[in-house]
Length: 636
Image 1 (cartoon, rainbow, N blue to C red):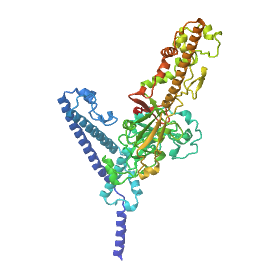
Image 2 (cartoon, helix red, strand yellow; image 1 turned 90 degrees about the vertical axis):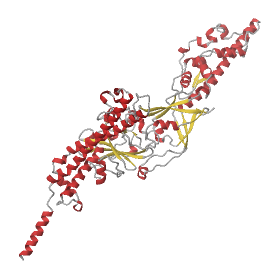
Image 3 (cartoon, rainbow, N blue to C red; image 1 turned 135 degrees about the vertical axis):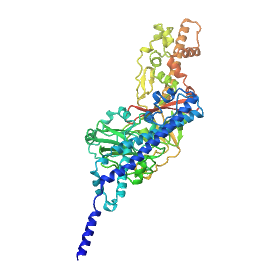
Image 4 (tube, helix red, strand yellow; image 1 turned 60 degrees about the horizontal axis):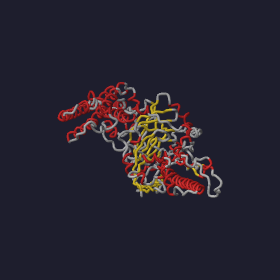
């Protein structure tokens, strides 16, 4: 009996002993030690590699006899430790070197290697700082709480220090690894704060109630305008020189977001590719309904689909729970493969999300694909491309007009445009009086005969009159305006001559379904028609004015010929001129603008090149994001 009691007591004691909590005071320092060693070794290795690269670069500079200040910058800014922070992207080469040979190319290749190694070095320095200041390194009170949160079957055995040390190390690595992306400061944060495009607030004021009854997260369909645009098929990162994007909501959401304007919150933009590549950039809330964020560098891949999520987090929020192997790869800066596309941060609050596709081309290469033919009579351009301009790009956001315009850049075009609105043209058409003489008896004097203006120089040569005093029609006229003598001022309005892009089939609008499938529809090669409103308007106006100028010339030549006939009949003298001579005289005395328009022939006046300037604006704003030229082949 006594032996049985001892056995029961021993088993009970053994069970209690087995459930004793881990000794965190001895486990935690041992778990941190290999992490400290790996970080220190990585820092030393990258510093050594950087030193070796600098030595090779020094040898090349010495061998070529270059002035190191012009190559490496003042105080070696371009190669010393921390040099990567000077560049917004990979170094593109030493622009001051014009004589390029294999040594120069090697020098530039080494500079790129130095950039990546220096960047990796500072990443490890950041890891070291975060590791040294990790809140659970010296304060052990949180480890028991974290341990108890683990389901019992998955907990490391409390009696196994090695299991507990492994678990602590994985917890630390997972916290550090993901927060390196989610909370690291952006190098371009200063640019984000200085980027302040002027939005169309007047248009926003027309939507006073929109968003008043919304709840978080806001629907992407309710975004007034954004960059990237929601659903955009051909987003091009290089259009934003400051590297900044934004989402603007109706003013009606201000009461929902205003609580995040002040307080202990951090804003993030989470970018996720359809393949699961995730990165974070810094964001900020402005004016209660505008959110700005940095665009990630070296992230977007041509033709891939992306989701942008705007998040607000408590400042103390930590990293998401990730598989251990992924945590270690993130910690070491190695490729990680795929993230789950529904990744979440603890305590995150999603404000909104939108979907888009990265364009196949950068902006300059895109312009090279827009080659086509000019249809001069109709005033439009046709071309074929495998990535037509996005319908959203041309039609704007959900509520506002297109942030794209095309303007003719050819110098002669501006001369023609100015001639169409010139004072001397309208003075010529409207002011000199021409009276009917065909039924006036010879014994009655015409007005031109009574006031002796028949031979007045300013009558025969209109430019000697006062054309600059003539009040010409307004610049922006939506319809033809009548002039004296049955002439008209044709419609001319830069503000009301919209550009239109027609495609053989609609360009796909990227949705969540496309993103989750990881594939967008392929439009294929499309025939596009680009109607340049100002161009078509100009061609039509020139045709009208040419006909009117010819009519006016003939009218005036006939008028003077009839006057000369009447004078000859009265005096009995032979006719001193011919109708053809008077026509030639009228042609020689044309005002400058009328003469230029009369000589304007399409397409000859624009040869050899017909050039447009393609202007992109940040959606919803008056600030340009890109200005590039397009050259077309005029059809004869």
